[in-house]
Image 1 (cartoon, rainbow, N blue to C red):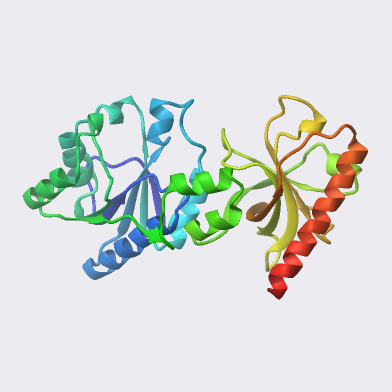
Image 2 (image 1 turned 90 degrees about the vertical axis):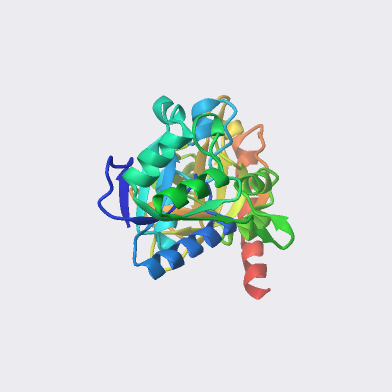
Length: 311
């Protein structure tokens, strides 16, 4: 998969294109990408995605923007696994926000990406003031020789699938519910870095996974599996949050205690898959009490994993 920063002034090849933020790459996104790649194969053209960085809501109202489900690196990895050929990461700034819908079509779709066929979500709007819509794209397609189709919202087991629904499930502790909407466990990827070694002092050494995001869509203590070390995912218990027992105002961290594992893995890039939530974070009066709770969490993790394997 080729990744481009922005859109060229003039395309060198035609594309089959979709546009969106694709945060989380849930079942709805996956269905759209399946249609995109199938259409691209029929036309013999690259399947291309135009996405934005930062998210437009982060640009217009950074304090009110929702927590991201996926970092840019995670999103690109998921797009590649979905069979996408080209991704154009377009910087969302004042210049792009002020672009009229007509200029967006002429400069980006026709000139920069030479769209042959465009597939969009049914709620897609574009251009200054969100003035562009599906009808406008259809007219532009007739005038410029490209096809346009809208993808209906996907329902899964009677529920509308959306990034907001996934966020709501994660915030409520519904890890299994989020996994059903995503079609896979929710995950966070990052590099293992050196932490404060508190877990090691308590007898439960942890891998500290670097977080590169301002806000997190979930927090608490979880049953997880970790990919990226060895041939198969390793089971573990994870803490994601601000560690209130150790102080106030601390930055969120992701710490994973891998069961029956003692190797040093600093520098490894791992993916933490969240399987179930055990409890919320809590503040304890002493490290001894925290150690007792961690032991209970590890026992609960082993029980969950055993029941899952047997069930």
